[in-house]
Image (tube, rainbow, N blue to C red; front, side, top):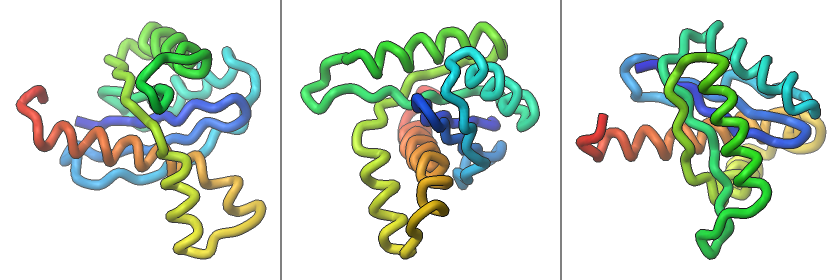
Length: 141
């Protein structure tokens, strides 16, 4: 199944995708958009262009497992994205993915503007890899 992951942010939204084999998650870009509705439209467009059959949206729970304002906004984004695309959309715990993305970027010595431009796509890739690992080890495919 072709699955697209979304790391929704207030200024930048990272996107990643995997092919039907569900083997490798790859970053496909960042949407630089601050307007919620425009970001939603561009994300839905990316899902259609990439023939996504399912979408996973990062769900930033607090470290104590509570749901904050950011997670609520991501939930609304996911609901509207499902309406717009007709694809099933699942929320996926994304705690620490941006930190992990920055750690990966440190290892590759990616700095400055280039880092800022790709960190959200890397975070989306980490979200998707985590979700694919769950699917691989779960009978709930």
